[in-house]
Image (cartoon, rainbow over all chains, first blue to last red; front, top):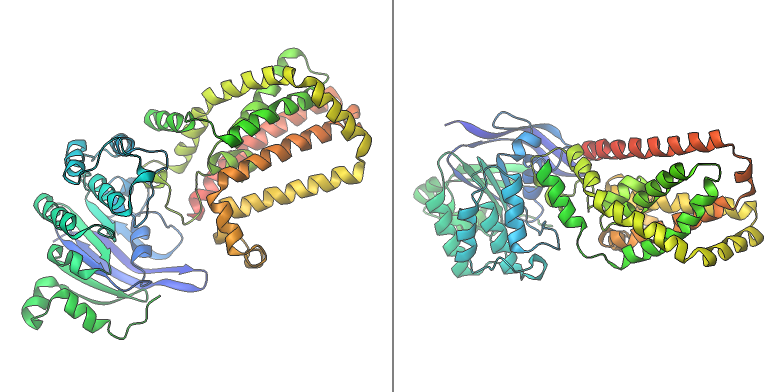
Length: 236
Length: 247
């Protein structure tokens, strides 16, 4: 299978703290990856570097053979774990924004997702509750037909019923020409989604495997395996 | 690019906030000050000078730090190195184009500023004349120097806090100021614009009252204007490229 994202000895410092410690990793096209680790393990930093939002780092990041920048932003859909919409925007403004600036944006798909999530176009983003905001962000990001989706804690604040609905939609609409990387520490939320898993701890990849192998060979769920691996882990 | 300009225009033409109103109220003072600064210029040169100053001020009053960056070398919109909280950071368009679009999108507001500038200038003329007389009588050279130093320090603080934030700010400054102060400015970038505008208006007003102005020749005045305009353009591009590199 061909590779969509490759990093080579990726290192990132925040002041003197090493957030990423020499990550060399590959993500193949057509898979949904779980990028799992406790708080402060470097998941967000890694995704940001891949989303061309952090340029000051050591090592190499290649997305579809390109260094992160203007061109890769057109093929990467990044969902941050915070609200990055302008305060004055309504849901319809966010739709128009994506429609205007991302060629791969499928407005109809996004509108359908918004309707499924019971979100009104006239609602002001700054007035949305945490759960509603999370749903809106997902509905808009998943409206893109990107080659690579980088989702940072996508289900944070979303209730169980809606989460199941979104996961079903994600699985049914997932194109084998794209790749999804889900960074989270809520393993149970995403377990059903994952084809492959990479564990991150203190800025390093400590384990990577196919989800099915763990289920078959160890007779464990990914969450059980995760808890075993990180039992003694220190978190921020 | 057109879509980006349209987007920025929509953003800028939202209801004007309190700080913009404060700025507009400062414009007449500046208009009056400009008349002092360019006494040898013909009417049309004076009009252009007023226009540039109005644009400069209005842009700086706008609710994002991008504007701040353009005018006080100090950008937003919440744009801080290593900060992806701005939607514009996520779109596949270069930083320079975003800045250019922002500048173009300011044109309608510049026109509004110009109109307010002229009308309010006449309206407040008497009051400001009295204030100038006060400045002339009560301030000496040392006072002017002190005000300029305070203003430069203020700009440096804005530069460090709003633009470069903790990423570039020296550690000792972070310690001195404390994180709550930094966070306050971080959130209140709009609030930071207004005092800057007021300070610049006062400064120009006071500087125009300096006796030395009388000794500046028309040619020196003309060159000074060119230097200021060129510097503004240069800073605009410098900021854009610095930001691009620092993120």
